[in-house]
Length: 267
Image (cartoon, rainbow, N blue to C red):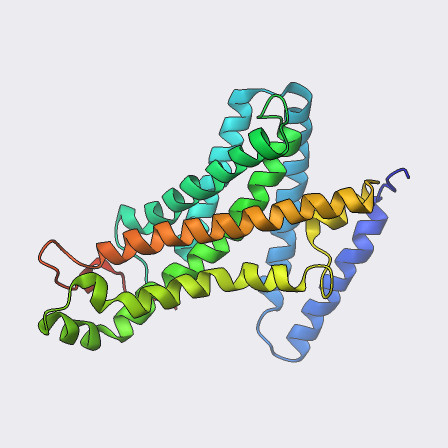
């Protein structure tokens, strides 16, 4: 089955629905009409630019251009992790913690998928590398952001309880153990929900795209299963790395709670 191409008119009909929703927002005084239009405009520009970039990458398969593309993706994802936290770490830790965690999890798991599971040659074939890495980064980013936000926010709110445990002689890891567990659990909830409802409530994005592109439904299901399992592993390993390093940063060498290493709450 040949892929049906969408025209500018087709897209404009879809965009009209966003304008309608923004109009309803203004009429009902929801206060999100402007943000909705900005988000729709950004996604339009970003995806069209990405389409042109990927067209060039697919034609050349240049390792250096692909490396630049992946670094830009990682840099933006790292910023988004930091921006989504109510209380973030000060200095380079605020940006570096989530970025490093995603690099260690998403990049390594993508490399494993390309070289061992899919076995594409060369392994940096952009047709496979960019979509796989993009899905892993996007979902891992959300999990790490949620986990770190829970860690820092709950540590701030329960600071008196943590300091009381330290005064009683507990190690720093014992004093914050419950908070760390809750933070890790919260980081994994989105992907657990996605796996639980896949194929019943929702038809995941990669499977939908492959079916629309003409792939056999069973092959599309296999690829989607691989992606879900890789995302779960990436979210878990990334959140674990971020929470361990972040919780250690909240205490100094003398095992004192250092909330001065966190910025004030963002509105």
